[in-house]
Length: 63
Length: 174
Ligand code: FES
Image (cartoon, rainbow over all chains, first blue to last red; front, side, top):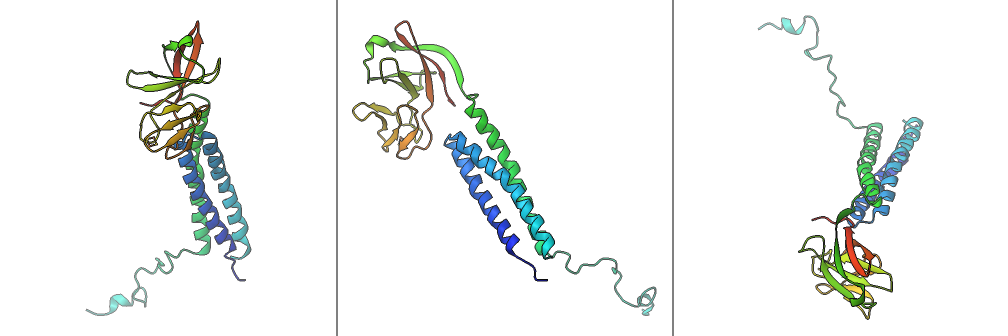
């Protein structure tokens, strides 16, 4: 069966978001906007299970 | 030398036959995805301390108490005027602004950009930094224009028998 590279692309997108939110989080921390810091941190944490789900779905189907 | 060693016990001349080095370092799609998920996990874990620190600041644990210090008498400060003082140390210049009858705000007035003294511009109702035209919101100390990105550290004030006192500083680091 032809393997799908869609999950790989999705995971790369997730990682890109991780980078963006990490930078946002650090900056907001130093600008003392602590609510924004917490929001970015929560998003970063949520992105991990999302990445794991993408992996689970993508790895079984076409490999 | 005879070629005996090459025949016993194997006919092949590969004495490392039990080590298969082919594709040993190949990163397939699955392995690559695993790496990506792992990286997402690292990001998630390393976000936690920032969240905790931010929550701590939000709960005011960064506030510091200092012995109370008299700034001025209520009578000598008309509404809308400001007065400079030093708090908590004698070199930490600060500004007290009377916004209304009972509303006073005070900030450490070293600009959060490059520490020029911020002053109170009465007719425009905002705090202005003369060096690079940074502006701060008078109610909160938050930067509203110009280069500064961090708010001015707020000083907690208390009015007691006709005088204004400084009692503590929010997030003051020195
Ligand atoms: S020092 Fe205040 S704006 Fe640059």
